[in-house]
Length: 46
Image 1 (tube, rainbow, N blue to C red):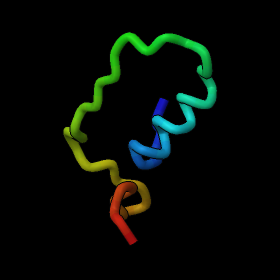
Image 2 (tube, one colour):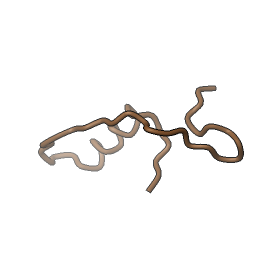
Image 3 (tube, helix red, strand yellow):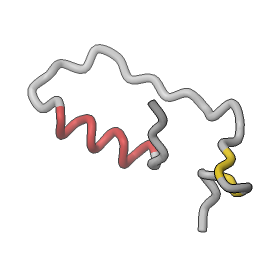
Image 4 (spheres, rainbow, N blue to C red):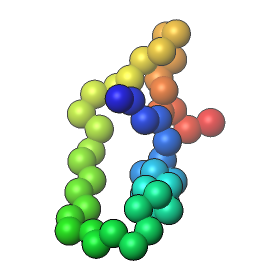
């Protein structure tokens, strides 16, 4: 699955989905490669 949203936004959505769950670990990995769609980088900031 590919999720192309900012990390903060993704964490907020997950926290809302799993309200009441105990968080055991949160890990954030840096992007290891550029994602290109239609000759444009997906994660470029406008």
